[in-house]
Amino acid sequence: MMELRKPYIIPVNDHVWLLDDDHMASCYVIDGTRQAAVIDTSIGLSNIQEAAESLTSLPLLCINTHGHEDHMGGNWSFDKAYMNLADLPLAEGWINGPEVREGIEQFGIHFPPFEHIEDGQIFDLGGITLEAVYFPGHTAGEIVLLDREDRILFSGDGIIEHLWLQLEESLPLRVQIDSMKKLLPLRNSFDTILHGHCQSPCGAELFDTLLAALEDLAAGNTADDIDYEWLGFVSKAHPYQPNNRRIVYKS
Ligand SMILES: [Zn+2]
Image (tube, rainbow, N blue to C red; front, side, top):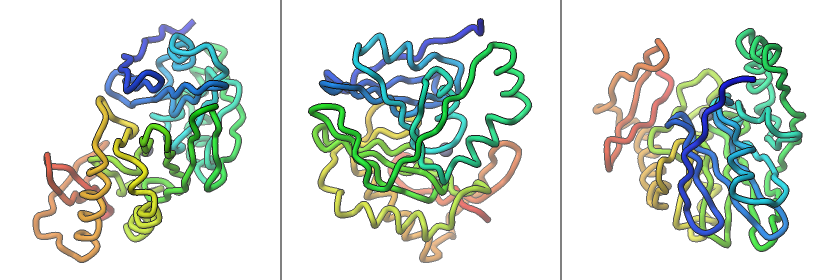
């Protein structure tokens, strides 16, 4: 059996937990009264299902914010996983790649079927509802999930300090801005943002500062932009404050 690590579990409140998987990615467990949701599963080197079962005895729903491997890679421990199927080619491209195929054969794991998430779909956990909102930009199939009861927005890689829009699969800047603006009517429904790489909760101001920075970038204010190296490639980054945040974009 594959040697698995355990995520570091940080309580957000008495029924929401952040699972920090070795600072590679963060997953979340939200416990209702009838079922519990697991949002994202990291890269697949931790058993996120087992970690979730240490927090709740309710049936688990596995929900992916998008199809990148550092978020859906751990789906193998579940029987079914939800995803916006616009990201299915991304997820399948990784699952069917040689490295993963080798791991699948060696360890006898399998990836579950993906069930499509509709825009506006509600996941009713009992006492807590998660509303999925399509949020194309970082990827075509990115979603965010609003927990109105806890006033938390789970934002995957869609609303994050260092936003990556430079990837081949990322959509144009205006699409990201449209996604942000589509969320404006819900802006007063959350105080906390829990994104796909959080090590502690973020304030909702992240949404406001990111939207302002995206509009600044779209207006062509790029004089302070810098080169940004990632995975052997170079792209451009638009810095914004506070704390030297970045929007990385196609150059
Ligand atoms: Zn991503």
